[in-house]
Length: 169
Image (cartoon, rainbow, N blue to C red):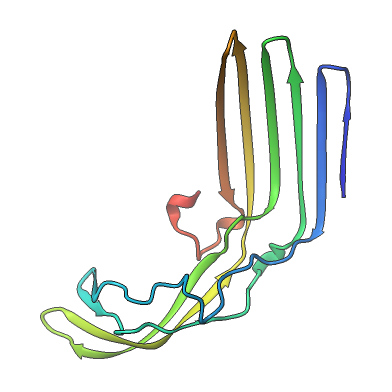
């Protein structure tokens, strides 16, 4: 559902509501988009993870805790002046990309002085859809043949979801 209008010829608005959003489409388990020949090992705090020679992936069904795909909405207001345009927007709903949470299994090869784990196939990927709120603004200024645009955006995950990295807030 979308709506829009104008309060004056210079001040316009748009609004939208999506009762249910479809999950993001990700490459299938056999897709060449997933890394097939990654680096031989990955160093992590206190150890090393050895990757399989030829990685196999299993992409599980999308999870949407907290109703991330339901009741998405947003609005935008714009002010159009002679040489400058201003725009403000706000959105609450599912993020553009889900968090990809891997499920890894392996065999412990060494535990001291560092641990070494050999991963086994398949690498299971759990796509997790999450809600976020976004505030954005823009200023566009035209001068002769120049167009200058300044824009900014702030994203914040809802409810302090524990599966998101702390820097994402």
